[in-house]
Length: 340
Ligand code: NDP
Image 1 (tube, helix red, strand yellow):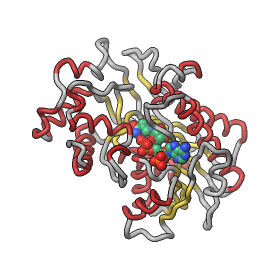
Image 2 (image 1 turned 60 degrees about the horizontal axis):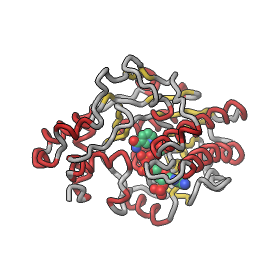
Image 3 (image 1 turned 135 degrees about the vertical axis):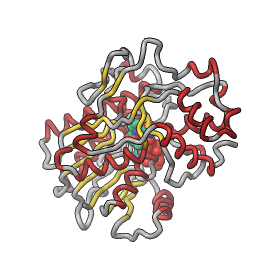
Image 4 (image 1 turned 120 degrees about the vertical axis):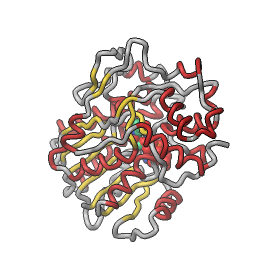
């Protein structure tokens, strides 16, 4: 299948790209600069232009940003939209809301207008669009049936809420688009919680480390010893399983019209510290202990559950356990000098 992948420079997109190429698909990926295109090309030396090429989309917050990118020869049959800002330092909620929502509706509009052979669009949403962070109850079991109730007013309360709202509103806008426009393609949405696992993309510098891996960096550098990173949720998935899930959502007819909650299991900061301490004893002294581990510990009345049946049964995804994800994340981060 000929696939357009947006946001190719990202942590997750790099794994989506690997899975696409490994399964024989031909890919054009959008990036924001030629430098980023060159870096990705360098990571795939044996892959020629027919299987991997690039299209520059500098800022998807601009109207019609994807109009040119969706046109290709041979034409695209599927689109995977992963690009979305993911950070917790927005000065203003609009910094996240505008590119997330405009990017998502923008690509759907461009596909509808200019890419008539596209049969499936897969959008990367988040557990943030499912999780009710304002009333998480121990007895709750989250699934695709749940939606975050976050409001526009709450989006302005904190950078974390701005991110949660950006994912929730962007996903809602995607389903509303399909409902209203009845396009010739079907939509599948992928909802992962915290994504951990090895980095395979070329980082320009450690400052460019993606948000979810900054947690592991802080454990290795010793920064978490005094201040453990807070947890917005208690569930994780390995980035390799998530990358494959995106591709399976393109390949499987039955994935059309559905959201997929792509979750492996629970995690806490204490569990991450235990795994790193056991597997990499030379870093034991740097790891948080005692009171600092209270940040990100499971709530005293118990933690909510999850139901990943749909992802396992329809997509056929198998989920790696936390230990494998942490060990491989650490191995990929150490050569970057993350422990210095
Ligand atoms: P990254 O920060 O590594 O990737 C984000 C990507 O979006 C980058 O390629 C970035 O380009 C691109 N992007 C951001 N803003 C714009 C813009 N205005 N115009 C064009 N491109 C833009 O994060 P992840 O790989 O972790 O995230 C990928 C997706 O997964 C996002 O949709 C995110 O919300 C979602 N997600 C991630 C989770 C996680 O734990 N990592 C959990 C749940 C969902 P550039 O690098 O050039 O800025």
